[in-house]
Amino acid sequence: MGTKSLPEAMIFDVDGTLFRTETLLLPAYHTTFDRLRSEGLFRGETPPEHYIINGLGMLLEHIWERVLPDYGRDVRRRADELLLKLQLDGLKRGEGELYEGVQETLQGLRERGVRLFTASNGLEAYVKGVIRHQGLEPLFEPDGLYSAGEFRTRSKVDLVKLLLEKHNIRSAWMVGDRSSDVEAGRENGLYVVGCDYAGFRKPRELEGADVRIASFSELLSLADESMKQSPA
Image (cartoon, rainbow, N blue to C red; front, side):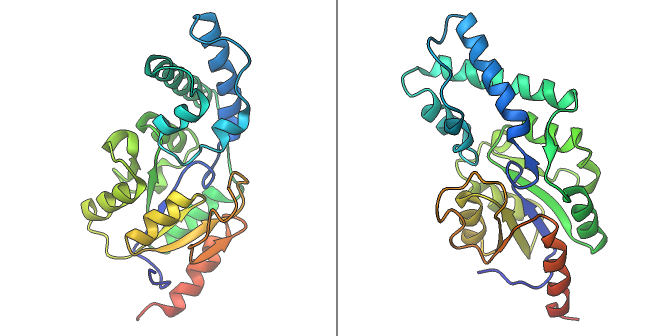
């Protein structure tokens, strides 16, 4: 377990933590399958939305194995390409929403001296696109947007370890909504804040988190409490 004292840095998952993913993902998901059908790569009804929603937080190759179990790698790769392009196009058009209080809370954490990073299992262009088009980029550290897509890590544990080493971070909180976030925090000795508001979780998904929050803005209260515990 990490310490609750005010950390040098906070590391955030993106989907289901900062970004209300379904507001961008689901329209793009349905259009992806329309395109796959028109290209002759897929037949039948679009797989139920819960296959893609429940896969959030997993590596992309594992998500597509769940969504398209009866199709080969080429079809899955094409689906991945289409979904990414459609989501990036949507972001450029201003589609997609942050959770309430995200921008103000991140600004408040910066004002308290906390360095901000992301650690996501998503693709580099998607993660950076969300942060940029939602106007959050100035709040994060330069070169602080980490994704499995960019660094080719096999787990979020490895991604967070790399981030900590590259930026010489000695104390940090891991903030996220999935079991992969809890695991990444605990395996790297961090204090883990479980985000209990996205609604994508499986039962006991956040078991092992040090604390749970029901809204993103609660992070500021936690930070202020922790400042009282930090050594002078």
